[in-house]
Image: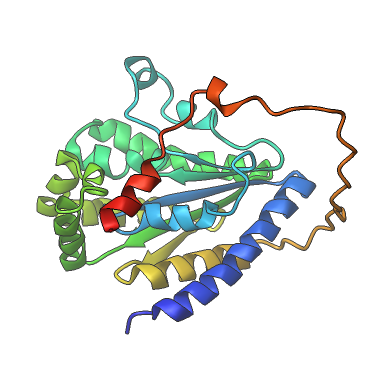
Length: 266
């Protein structure tokens, strides 16, 4: 049974209030939080990130979605370009896909060698253990979706001018490589689902339920608290000193497009 819109919106608002409290705690305590979002294409990672950051301060909570590596980056230690995006004190980083590209799309599409893949599976738990030992709060979420629901979402995106950009030839090929991606994911979990940085699986066929479940779980894993904020009071405006606003005729204003909508309706 899918979660109703009224229940969803009410609970989402409550959780977003808590996310703001978490943000203020992170800033006040100088904490460092990294949240990894991985999973199937069209499983709902992006929409979950959007709801998390909707009311947060972008100077505190930032989204990292890296493009394909450059020629120079391909010659670096694999984790090197991700290290540059890790948070400093008082910051939250949401990784819209992460170093786990090597265990997923690179593995399946042949963008890395078998040796590079094996090295990644050995080094990844060590790398993440180093982050956790240094005090970083690391949370990893895998968004799962059924093959039928994924195909339905892909078809919907094809017909939606606002979402067509989300589809790429690589995304469409994932339909024909469903089992390959499944095997790669299973192997990844065997090696990287470790006590220091466990994986949490989000069932994503119901997007509303998935967002609520994921956000609620994230909040439950961090012992944040309310942070006292200064009491603010609007000051009184001082008396005018004779300033006159510049005449509008001397400025280049944006055309009133909204007025054409009213005329069209009539």
